[in-house]
Image 1: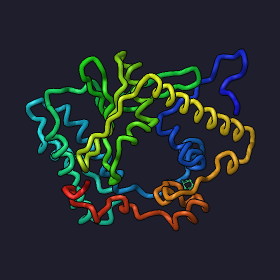
Image 2 (image 1 turned 90 degrees about the vertical axis):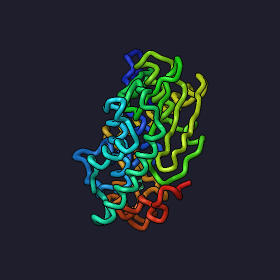
Image 3 (image 1 turned 90 degrees about the horizontal axis):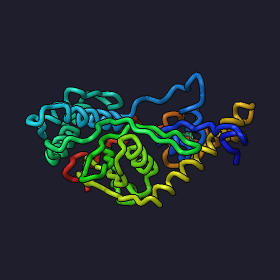
Length: 286
Ligand code: SF4
Protein backbone atom coordinates (compact mmCIF):
# COMPACT_ATOMS: atom_id res chain seq x y z
CA UNK A 1 0.00 0.00 0.00
CA UNK A 2 1.51 3.33 -0.98
CA UNK A 3 1.96 6.20 1.41
CA UNK A 4 0.40 9.55 0.67
CA UNK A 5 3.67 11.45 0.94
CA UNK A 6 7.35 10.90 0.14
CA UNK A 7 9.76 10.18 2.92
CA UNK A 8 11.17 13.37 4.40
CA UNK A 9 8.59 15.49 2.58
CA UNK A 10 5.55 17.05 4.23
CA UNK A 11 2.63 14.62 4.01
CA UNK A 12 0.09 15.42 1.31
CA UNK A 13 -3.32 15.38 2.92
CA UNK A 14 -6.16 13.50 1.28
CA UNK A 15 -9.09 15.93 1.26
CA UNK A 16 -12.46 14.28 1.40
CA UNK A 17 -15.97 14.18 2.72
CA UNK A 18 -17.18 11.14 4.64
CA UNK A 19 -19.39 10.17 1.71
CA UNK A 20 -16.35 10.13 -0.60
CA UNK A 21 -14.74 7.56 1.67
CA UNK A 22 -17.83 5.36 1.89
CA UNK A 23 -18.25 5.62 -1.88
CA UNK A 24 -14.84 3.94 -2.28
CA UNK A 25 -15.94 1.15 0.04
CA UNK A 26 -19.22 0.61 -1.80
CA UNK A 27 -17.71 0.45 -5.27
CA UNK A 28 -14.33 1.75 -6.51
CA UNK A 29 -15.66 2.13 -10.06
CA UNK A 30 -18.53 4.31 -8.87
CA UNK A 31 -15.99 6.30 -6.82
CA UNK A 32 -13.95 6.91 -9.98
CA UNK A 33 -16.99 7.91 -12.00
CA UNK A 34 -18.22 10.23 -9.25
CA UNK A 35 -15.02 11.94 -8.18
CA UNK A 36 -12.32 11.48 -10.81
CA UNK A 37 -13.64 11.13 -14.34
CA UNK A 38 -13.45 14.40 -16.26
CA UNK A 39 -15.45 15.48 -18.09
CA UNK A 40 -18.01 13.97 -15.73
CA UNK A 41 -20.09 11.10 -17.04
CA UNK A 42 -23.77 11.70 -17.50
CA UNK A 43 -25.77 10.49 -14.51
CA UNK A 44 -29.13 8.79 -14.66
CA UNK A 45 -32.32 10.72 -13.89
CA UNK A 46 -33.11 12.17 -10.47
CA UNK A 47 -34.51 9.81 -7.83
CA UNK A 48 -37.87 10.70 -6.33
CA UNK A 49 -36.84 9.45 -2.88
CA UNK A 50 -33.85 11.81 -3.02
CA UNK A 51 -36.23 14.65 -3.86
CA UNK A 52 -38.30 13.81 -0.78
CA UNK A 53 -35.15 13.69 1.34
CA UNK A 54 -33.73 16.95 0.03
CA UNK A 55 -36.96 18.89 0.48
CA UNK A 56 -37.53 17.48 3.99
CA UNK A 57 -33.98 18.48 4.99
CA UNK A 58 -34.51 21.96 3.59
CA UNK A 59 -37.82 22.43 5.40
CA UNK A 60 -36.36 21.33 8.73
CA UNK A 61 -33.34 23.60 8.26
CA UNK A 62 -35.54 26.61 7.51
CA UNK A 63 -37.83 25.78 10.44
CA UNK A 64 -35.15 27.00 12.84
CA UNK A 65 -35.00 30.35 11.03
CA UNK A 66 -38.60 31.04 12.05
CA UNK A 67 -39.26 33.08 15.20
CA UNK A 68 -39.61 30.71 18.12
CA UNK A 69 -43.38 31.20 18.46
CA UNK A 70 -43.88 30.13 14.83
CA UNK A 71 -41.89 26.90 15.10
CA UNK A 72 -44.80 24.49 14.93
CA UNK A 73 -45.55 21.24 13.13
CA UNK A 74 -47.87 22.87 10.58
CA UNK A 75 -45.18 25.48 9.90
CA UNK A 76 -42.77 22.68 8.96
CA UNK A 77 -45.39 21.30 6.56
CA UNK A 78 -45.82 24.77 5.04
CA UNK A 79 -42.07 25.10 4.50
CA UNK A 80 -41.95 21.71 2.83
CA UNK A 81 -44.87 22.55 0.56
CA UNK A 82 -43.23 25.81 -0.48
CA UNK A 83 -39.95 24.05 -1.30
CA UNK A 84 -41.59 21.07 -3.01
CA UNK A 85 -40.00 19.65 -6.18
CA UNK A 86 -41.27 16.99 -8.55
CA UNK A 87 -37.98 15.52 -9.84
CA UNK A 88 -38.08 11.75 -10.24
CA UNK A 89 -41.81 11.16 -9.71
CA UNK A 90 -43.78 9.18 -12.27
CA UNK A 91 -46.46 11.84 -12.71
CA UNK A 92 -48.16 14.81 -11.06
CA UNK A 93 -50.54 12.62 -9.13
CA UNK A 94 -47.71 10.66 -7.49
CA UNK A 95 -45.76 13.83 -6.75
CA UNK A 96 -48.84 15.40 -5.17
CA UNK A 97 -49.51 12.35 -3.03
CA UNK A 98 -45.92 12.33 -1.80
CA UNK A 99 -46.04 16.00 -0.99
CA UNK A 100 -48.79 15.02 1.43
CA UNK A 101 -46.84 12.10 2.93
CA UNK A 102 -43.68 14.16 3.28
CA UNK A 103 -45.71 16.99 4.83
CA UNK A 104 -47.11 14.53 7.40
CA UNK A 105 -43.60 13.34 8.12
CA UNK A 106 -42.00 16.72 8.83
CA UNK A 107 -45.08 18.01 10.64
CA UNK A 108 -45.05 15.07 13.01
CA UNK A 109 -41.31 15.33 13.53
CA UNK A 110 -41.37 19.08 14.17
CA UNK A 111 -44.26 18.62 16.61
CA UNK A 112 -41.86 16.61 18.76
CA UNK A 113 -39.13 19.27 18.79
CA UNK A 114 -38.67 21.89 21.47
CA UNK A 115 -38.77 25.20 19.60
CA UNK A 116 -36.83 26.89 22.40
CA UNK A 117 -33.84 24.56 22.02
CA UNK A 118 -31.90 26.31 19.28
CA UNK A 119 -29.30 23.98 17.80
CA UNK A 120 -25.65 25.01 17.77
CA UNK A 121 -25.56 24.40 14.04
CA UNK A 122 -27.90 23.73 11.13
CA UNK A 123 -26.36 22.41 7.91
CA UNK A 124 -23.11 23.27 9.62
CA UNK A 125 -19.82 22.71 7.80
CA UNK A 126 -17.26 21.12 10.10
CA UNK A 127 -13.76 19.80 9.50
CA UNK A 128 -10.73 18.20 11.04
CA UNK A 129 -7.33 16.91 10.00
CA UNK A 130 -5.17 13.95 10.86
CA UNK A 131 -1.60 13.35 9.70
CA UNK A 132 -2.90 12.10 6.34
CA UNK A 133 -6.52 13.24 6.05
CA UNK A 134 -8.43 16.51 5.76
CA UNK A 135 -12.08 15.65 6.36
CA UNK A 136 -14.90 18.13 5.94
CA UNK A 137 -18.63 17.85 5.59
CA UNK A 138 -21.99 19.34 6.43
CA UNK A 139 -23.95 18.11 9.43
CA UNK A 140 -27.75 18.28 9.33
CA UNK A 141 -27.95 19.53 12.91
CA UNK A 142 -25.66 19.93 15.88
CA UNK A 143 -27.38 20.01 19.29
CA UNK A 144 -25.94 21.04 22.61
CA UNK A 145 -26.90 18.76 25.50
CA UNK A 146 -25.28 19.92 28.70
CA UNK A 147 -21.57 20.46 28.08
CA UNK A 148 -21.48 18.27 24.97
CA UNK A 149 -22.51 18.43 21.35
CA UNK A 150 -24.59 15.80 19.56
CA UNK A 151 -24.49 15.10 15.83
CA UNK A 152 -28.00 14.73 14.40
CA UNK A 153 -28.44 13.17 10.97
CA UNK A 154 -31.92 13.09 9.39
CA UNK A 155 -32.90 9.95 7.50
CA UNK A 156 -35.92 9.82 5.21
CA UNK A 157 -35.46 6.43 3.51
CA UNK A 158 -37.81 3.52 3.80
CA UNK A 159 -35.30 1.14 5.44
CA UNK A 160 -35.74 0.57 9.14
CA UNK A 161 -32.59 1.56 11.05
CA UNK A 162 -30.99 0.06 14.13
CA UNK A 163 -28.54 1.25 16.73
CA UNK A 164 -25.85 -0.58 14.76
CA UNK A 165 -26.36 1.89 11.93
CA UNK A 166 -25.46 4.74 14.29
CA UNK A 167 -22.60 2.83 15.90
CA UNK A 168 -21.04 1.63 12.65
CA UNK A 169 -21.44 4.81 10.62
CA UNK A 170 -18.05 6.08 9.55
CA UNK A 171 -19.62 9.38 8.51
CA UNK A 172 -21.23 10.03 11.90
CA UNK A 173 -18.02 9.22 13.76
CA UNK A 174 -16.02 11.58 11.55
CA UNK A 175 -18.66 14.27 11.97
CA UNK A 176 -18.43 13.92 15.75
CA UNK A 177 -14.68 14.49 15.58
CA UNK A 178 -15.13 17.38 13.17
CA UNK A 179 -17.78 19.02 15.38
CA UNK A 180 -15.53 18.72 18.41
CA UNK A 181 -12.62 20.23 16.51
CA UNK A 182 -14.51 23.01 14.72
CA UNK A 183 -16.75 24.04 17.59
CA UNK A 184 -14.15 23.38 20.31
CA UNK A 185 -16.58 21.40 22.42
CA UNK A 186 -16.62 17.71 23.32
CA UNK A 187 -18.75 15.64 20.92
CA UNK A 188 -19.04 11.88 21.16
CA UNK A 189 -22.75 11.22 20.70
CA UNK A 190 -24.31 10.65 17.28
CA UNK A 191 -27.97 10.22 16.40
CA UNK A 192 -29.88 9.07 13.35
CA UNK A 193 -33.36 10.63 13.32
CA UNK A 194 -35.52 8.45 11.07
CA UNK A 195 -38.28 10.83 10.06
CA UNK A 196 -40.78 8.31 8.61
CA UNK A 197 -40.93 6.30 11.84
CA UNK A 198 -39.94 9.02 14.32
CA UNK A 199 -37.27 6.69 15.74
CA UNK A 200 -33.97 8.01 17.07
CA UNK A 201 -31.02 5.63 16.88
CA UNK A 202 -28.22 6.89 19.09
CA UNK A 203 -24.67 5.88 19.85
CA UNK A 204 -22.14 7.28 22.27
CA UNK A 205 -18.58 6.92 21.01
CA UNK A 206 -15.51 6.49 23.17
CA UNK A 207 -12.05 7.81 22.28
CA UNK A 208 -11.21 4.25 21.24
CA UNK A 209 -14.18 3.79 18.89
CA UNK A 210 -13.54 7.19 17.32
CA UNK A 211 -9.87 6.33 16.87
CA UNK A 212 -10.90 3.07 15.17
CA UNK A 213 -13.08 5.00 12.71
CA UNK A 214 -10.20 7.39 11.98
CA UNK A 215 -7.84 4.50 11.29
CA UNK A 216 -10.44 3.02 8.95
CA UNK A 217 -10.86 6.37 7.19
CA UNK A 218 -7.10 6.72 6.79
CA UNK A 219 -6.82 3.22 5.37
CA UNK A 220 -9.56 3.93 2.82
CA UNK A 221 -7.92 7.22 1.86
CA UNK A 222 -4.56 5.51 1.40
CA UNK A 223 -6.09 2.94 -0.94
CA UNK A 224 -8.05 5.51 -2.94
CA UNK A 225 -5.05 7.85 -3.23
CA UNK A 226 -2.77 5.03 -4.36
CA UNK A 227 -5.26 3.95 -7.04
CA UNK A 228 -5.55 7.53 -8.29
CA UNK A 229 -1.78 7.91 -8.42
CA UNK A 230 -1.44 4.77 -10.52
CA UNK A 231 -4.27 5.91 -12.76
CA UNK A 232 -2.50 9.22 -13.33
CA UNK A 233 0.59 7.27 -14.35
CA UNK A 234 -1.41 5.44 -17.00
CA UNK A 235 -2.52 2.42 -14.97
CA UNK A 236 -5.58 0.40 -16.06
CA UNK A 237 -8.72 2.10 -14.77
CA UNK A 238 -10.81 -1.07 -14.57
CA UNK A 239 -8.21 -2.88 -12.46
CA UNK A 240 -7.44 0.04 -10.18
CA UNK A 241 -11.11 0.90 -9.75
CA UNK A 242 -12.91 -2.42 -10.15
CA UNK A 243 -16.69 -2.65 -10.27
CA UNK A 244 -18.28 -4.14 -7.18
CA UNK A 245 -21.65 -5.40 -8.41
CA UNK A 246 -24.30 -5.73 -5.73
CA UNK A 247 -27.99 -5.25 -5.10
CA UNK A 248 -27.21 -1.50 -4.95
CA UNK A 249 -26.37 -1.33 -8.66
CA UNK A 250 -30.00 -0.69 -9.56
CA UNK A 251 -29.69 2.57 -7.60
CA UNK A 252 -26.34 3.62 -9.05
CA UNK A 253 -26.33 6.92 -10.94
CA UNK A 254 -23.74 5.51 -13.33
CA UNK A 255 -25.10 2.01 -13.99
CA UNK A 256 -25.75 2.89 -17.64
CA UNK A 257 -21.95 3.14 -18.04
CA UNK A 258 -21.25 -0.12 -16.23
CA UNK A 259 -21.94 -3.48 -17.94
CA UNK A 260 -21.20 -5.47 -14.78
CA UNK A 261 -23.62 -3.38 -12.74
CA UNK A 262 -26.31 -3.64 -15.40
CA UNK A 263 -25.92 -7.41 -15.47
CA UNK A 264 -26.15 -7.60 -11.68
CA UNK A 265 -29.20 -5.41 -11.37
CA UNK A 266 -31.06 -6.17 -14.58
CA UNK A 267 -31.05 -2.44 -15.32
CA UNK A 268 -31.59 0.78 -13.39
CA UNK A 269 -34.57 0.94 -11.06
CA UNK A 270 -37.40 3.29 -11.91
CA UNK A 271 -36.68 6.78 -10.55
CA UNK A 272 -39.65 6.49 -8.18
CA UNK A 273 -38.95 2.89 -7.08
CA UNK A 274 -37.39 4.01 -3.78
CA UNK A 275 -40.64 5.52 -2.57
CA UNK A 276 -42.03 2.27 -1.19
CA UNK A 277 -45.51 2.94 -2.44
CA UNK A 278 -46.75 -0.20 -0.77
CA UNK A 279 -45.80 1.27 2.58
CA UNK A 280 -46.77 4.80 1.77
CA UNK A 281 -49.12 5.55 4.68
CA UNK A 282 -46.59 6.77 7.23
CA UNK A 283 -48.60 5.49 10.18
CA UNK A 284 -47.86 1.97 9.00
CA UNK A 285 -44.10 2.43 8.86
CA UNK A 286 -42.48 0.52 11.70
S1 SF4 B 1 -23.46 -0.16 -11.37
FE1 SF4 B 1 -22.70 -1.22 -9.53
S2 SF4 B 1 -20.69 -2.03 -10.09
FE2 SF4 B 1 -21.23 -0.47 -11.60
S3 SF4 B 1 -20.34 1.44 -10.86
FE3 SF4 B 1 -22.43 1.37 -10.10
S4 SF4 B 1 -22.28 0.45 -8.07
FE4 SF4 B 1 -20.37 -0.03 -9.14
